[in-house]
Length: 426
Figure (cartoon, rainbow, N blue to C red):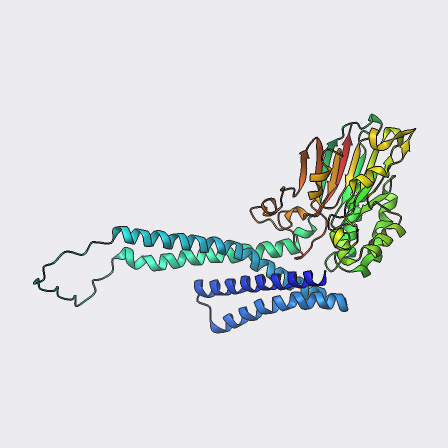
């Protein structure tokens, strides 16, 4: 994993450097920037890249408020750059197409040179250039104005949306009340409520203030069961104790307690300390395992490991068959055959395998795209487009939670952090 992370870091650094250069060149091309302002802009863009790496390194070696502040500012500046570049690429495309059209038009409308005899007297050279028409004189300023408007809008949208997402959007918590009809559910459990928290990412930008807010939302939701669907830590196993304190507060809020599964970031941080902290706090951790809630009139709750666990453990990864096989006998009948199944799996992509074998899968991982300006790019780049909300396949349902915290830039745009209150309907 060390080499893969190094390659990933180099690729990200190269892309960010290219994005910064693109923004700098467009700023100088579109606006008359004084030399001192150009120098300041170069320093800001350069230091933001250095600050990202330095802030993360300091936070790992010696966590402090200063290191977090450096990372926060640097990451938001780089997010501003990336959003601006997305719009500048549209400007680049328009300029390219305009240039192609102009060249084609010039070729088709260029006058054919007249045929002259060998003895014809050569034309006298013009002694003076005729004055430009008023329309021609206005052409250059108008083009400059349009360019400045387009580039300025890109910078304005990039900067304002990034800072809004960082200062407001990532704390704009929403409780999503989601009724989910469960085939085979007994009327005795009609209305059973599951509160789902996912992708908390306890770390540099999710601390006690955010966890206190999460606790209050869960308390108000009055759940029968709380499920934590992975990525509970961001990158630092030393924060497992903070996760444990949070879970210990959640356990008394639900009569069925807290159930948790692992996510990819829990493996990045250290899965064993994460699982140990969860269990010590009173949570039930399902790793390719399951149990029955409500007895013979209830449902089977299953949990599998993250789809990327194989990178960290021999024979690691989700094993739904093993989880189903772990279910006990209920009144002499095997729960795996007779009870509806609810599956907890961090990555929604596993729904390809689980559909048809479970009635419901609860997932997270995608953060709802996390940064969605005008469009939601994750719907295009993710294989099945399972980004947020409810989906159906082969008679099964999938619900994807947008997540609570953030990964990468500490901002959310068009993807409010979510606490799901799923209500099972018979």
